[in-house]
Image 1: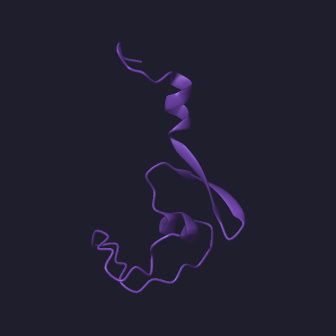
Image 2: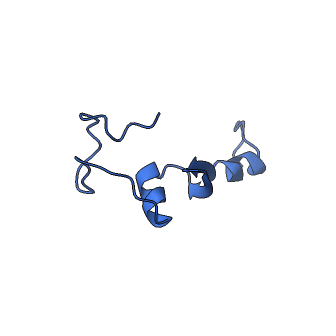
Amino acid sequence: MERGSSLTGLEENMKSTVQIRIDGKTVEAPAGSTILDVAKSEGIHIPVLCYSPLLRPLENCRLCVVA
């Protein structure tokens, strides 16, 4: 760990993955991954209209907004 860093090794490791719950199923995912990618990897279908892996998220239709 670099001098002046406020994170301990344990805290840095904790931030590398996150736990999320989709339809009652708890899954562990790499920090920074999208909910859509995690759901797909777990076989959970989330309907999308404007998603394309070639484009950045536009957030226009709001169908993919998580509530």
